[in-house]
Every structure is written in structure tokens, then in C-alpha cells.
Image 1 (tube, rainbow, N blue to C red):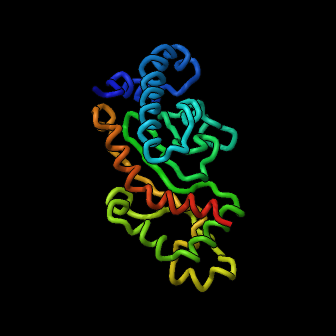
Image 2 (cartoon, rainbow, N blue to C red):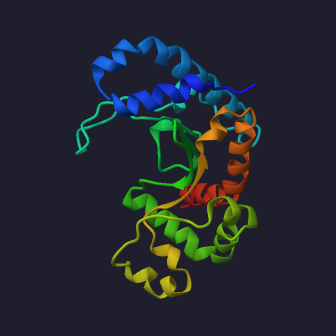
Amino acid sequence: MSHFNPAFTKFFKELSKNNKTDWFNENRKTYEKEVKAPFNAFVGEMIKRIQKHEPEIKIKPADAIMRINKDIRFSKDNTPYNIHVAANISAYGKKDKSYPGLYFQLSHDKIMIFGGAYMMEPATLQKVRNYIAKNLKNFSEAYGDKKFKEKFGAIQGEKSKRMPEDFQALASKEPLIANKQFYYRAELKADALLKKELPEVLMEHYIAGKKLNDFLKTALKSK
């Protein structure tokens, strides 16, 4: 049995056309029943599945699930709500997006899956680059893994326009060291949302990205 039903997708279809506080308040009961409750249960199941591979993860669904309210302080789009639900499963959950985990967002039109390291501070980025420089083979094996390439293609992220001197020579050998972010992404069609196999599909993506996530986590813990 699927975690979600057509009422989930219907809610977000309508929200995308009526992204206003009044409309949301009028439909809050539908949101609570058809979106919030099933997504909370789904995230709980995903946490349990991932804990089998990462016992150090001790979070609850509330620690992973992002607010549906948008932060519009720095956005040109003033609509108040996201038209998706999202969660970040890692040892730190939604509190730390720089720590590698499994991030996914579900909506009426698609499912997005992300992993890797994002929004890193300069000191954290320096650690990752230092670790890559000392472990080039392991790094290339992680992102060159067959399953990783099948599911995600390649590492993505903004690059530094000017590289620190220490890494300039190395950048010609491993261009990814110029990245300021090391994330990967996949997009699934919306019909996957209503299938009972959705948890297994997300776990397939989790496993495909695990080798790179593990490399990045080790890098973040290095001195």
C-alpha cells in the first residue's frame, strides 16, 4: 500500500494555483490529513531504513522535515508556501545542510532526490579539498561508481572562479576540487509518488550515493 494517495497530489496542484494564506487556512485540515500526516509517517519509515546503514542517526521525523512555509526574506517570489514537502535525513537532519545525507522533496509534478555536501562554510570546504587532494583515487572511485553514475550522473555544484594556490596545479588533474559544493541530484516522475515501492526506490538512490557521502563525511571529520 502506498504512503500517499491522489489527495496529496491534488492538494499541491491546487496550492500551486492558490498560493495564498487565506486559501491555505481554508484547506488546512486537508493539508494535515492528506499531506502532513502521511509524509511524517513516510519520513519515519525512511529514517528506520537508513538507520540500518547508519546507526548513528538518532533523529525523529520532526528533526528532518522542512517547514512548508517559505522563507521569503531574500526571495523575489513572495508566495508564502512551498509547493512540495521535503526532508533531510542525516545525523543532523534539517539543522545542517552541509553534512551529507539523503534529502528528498515530493510534489504533484515530480520527486527530487539530493545527496552530498551543500552550503559549506569556507573552513569546511578547505577540509574537503584537503582530503580530496590526499585521496584522489578514492574520490574518483566514489563518483565514478557505476550505481552512482546510473542514478545521478555526476557531482554538481558551483565552482570557485579563483582557486587557492595550493590547489591550482591539482585542479588540472581533478577539476572537481574547484567545486564549492559537492552535491548530486536525481528527478523522478510524479507517478512514482503513488506507488508502494517508493521507499525502495529512494533507498536505491541512497545506496547509490552512499560511497560518495561516506567519503565526504570522512573528509569533514578529518584534521
